[in-house]
Image (cartoon, rainbow, N blue to C red; front, side, top):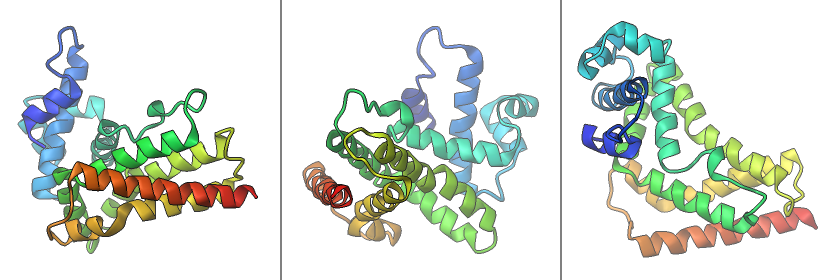
Length: 217
């Protein structure tokens, strides 16, 4: 993601935005670029501060350590695609509509070029640094799974217990990864037209509703 894209997506150019929020956003954008280019191990807090045009003290005032900064970069990307609790309202939306929304956003996230690149970086580093893989997993895939598990366990129409919700959420995300995800990880061309991906997510949600109904019987 370029600096300009970060500024637009995070609203850093909007009038009246607190300077501390602007600095935090700038640090996150810079860190994202460095993690992608250099990897986790070779990206230092000093480098992030220098590239962001702020002091190292300012970086540490927003992010206590590099682990938190790295996690925040991943979380920001999830939030950009609305893979977050604030995007869910069980009081006003049916479970199928909510799953459709999450499915569309998740597939859009996985087909984002910067996300594909980050996956490649993490896979490359994980051989020598299991911690970076764990941080990525917890902030990304595990976060999404927890979100859907909570939705399935709490939505009034599902009636799933915690174990059933966990099973269905795991199946939901595994189905959503599909063939295109493996192709993207291998840097092979994959189908990415909005129409085809929309049809794909609809099929996944349909299968997921069947699983939910099976547990309700």
